[in-house]
Length: 245
Ligand SMILES: Nc1nc2c(ncn2[C@@H]2O[C@H](COP(=O)(O)OP(=O)(O)OP(=O)(O)O)[C@@H](O)[C@H]2O)c(=O)[nH]1
Ligand SMILES: [Mg+2]
Image (cartoon, rainbow, N blue to C red; front, side, top):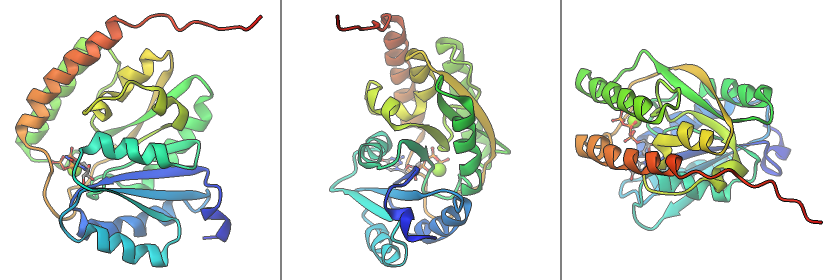
């Protein structure tokens, strides 16, 4: 890693973390080699963790100057954590991944490459999980949620729940914000008139710790959010082209 990597990064990797102490070290050890060709920073957003996540991130920062920790005083949720990271990012390109080890950082460059090669019309590259490692029941919930979402929003996306995503920072900051937004990025990006690209990624099991979501968060809140996103899309107005004369 060269010293310039901490000055002006080309890519900001954002990792939301709530009680992921045991996952921090193995994950950062995988991110750095995956991005050697690029100047990068990694922003771990510690979402009010009550375990050793804060201390572990502090310890690793001494070794890795590219590793930043932003900490929420109390837990505000995964969307808020992503928003905090995006706002603080210094690079024009953002890549996100979950902090539990399920998303393999080896796919990070594929997402960034696809975004760059897609040109200015592409506003999002979404990872599509293959070989899901979740339990049968969780996979069923996810399959139903994805089928209902894509039927209602017609966002052309097989899997919107994968943590691996790449997008321009400016576009992300312009999207309407609500809790749960991270599950609807393809529809929201298309709403802005941008295209969405896809990259298949191999899913892994959670490395340590426990899932932060129960069935209620996933299904019922998901249904409520789906209604909200449907409304946002219905109420979309043409974006005016403005010229000053
Ligand atoms: N669920 C949840 N995750 C959070 C929160 N804040 C940060 N995160 C992080 O967001 C990422 C995704 O959360 P997970 O609990 O793994 O959710 P998931 O991958 O959809 O579900 P599992 O398949 O059960 O692991 C992890 O890195 C969490 O640590 C929060 O308030 N709730
Ligand atoms: Mg997970």
